[in-house]
Image 1: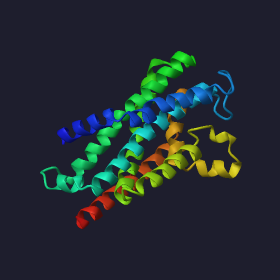
Image 2: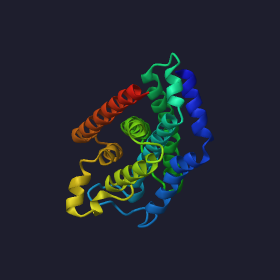
Image 3: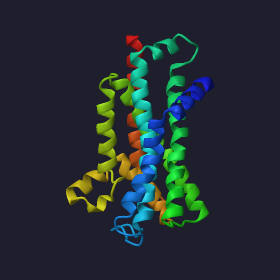
Length: 246
């Protein structure tokens, strides 16, 4: 399995388009959005300045991009071209393939988080305590596993032709409605009620609580745990179903 993880990492790091959208793109969006109302404007209901608030949102968005976009399309295409079937003829267990995909995506997601943090600190003067930087990195990195599981599920659900539109709709829907591109406080009341139950909203809320030196809300943790169980369970069921077809 270690060899497969190394192979997956090598492939991801050589994919310049993937690296751009998972590492550079979130930082560029952060600079664009955080510059709209100045560095001292406070986000309603949070007590955080816009750059501080959006730093967590864009770091979460970058990690989401790395694990969701990376997993879903690769798995669907590898199923279609027979690579997954070839791996089943080796001694690699089925769970090893899924773990290798998840592990490689998680490693690639770390630069997405760190680059946004560096840009925020250097160009927008975001200042936090050392423990907050470490806690933010750990929370956002660990939370990305929820969406890594979703990427695996989509990869086994969709065909090679359908996987991109399905992934993009899911990707942009979760990002926008979950409040990663702009604060959900600006949404109409009915849309805010929906956003509060989305995993992306709970995901960014973890980091925002840490920025305010507070413990993450139990509701947000529970939402992420439930969605992780749903996505991971769905991925496992779809994997077994795909195995029976092979």
